[in-house]
Image (cartoon, rainbow, N blue to C red; front, side):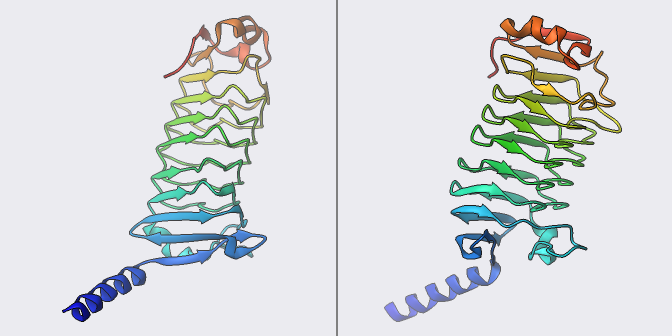
Length: 242
């Protein structure tokens, strides 16, 4: 009886393993980070930095290219320190959980996805070029307090983006960071004590006269006189966010 039970258990485990796909994607040591795709969930675990990739027609596309249509959810574990370039470019993912040790989000890492909202945790320091660009369903972004730099085109051309919260640590916002061909952005909250340095074209095609800029009470006068920020039609104070 025990033997039958053991054989059945082994058979079940074997079936599960057949359904999962696994890749090693650490940098410099590939084995340090393992990516597993199972039932639509892509889980990345291990320690250190991920490898960088490129678009599918270039030298180093992601090795799971054939499985991209089945990926819906991404979970990045706490041991990961950086998210590789182009990691999920043009993937149909609808949700992502970013681990508590990630410091860098790579170029185009989540560009052209099906994400509807993004929460970037406080441990992230740098959001690189076009990291969340070209995502047609993205409507809400919260940038954590640890982020210091929002790179060029980081959230470029997200036509449904309606609200952005920028954490207290941000000091620099790059070219076309929140620009769009068509923009629905109507709320920007900035929690920095001083206005971040911002490119003149960071909000191109955003109707700043119709967009509310919310800042800390002690920062109100600074934003009202700062380049780019002063062009917002309505600047109000906010004590905190939930």
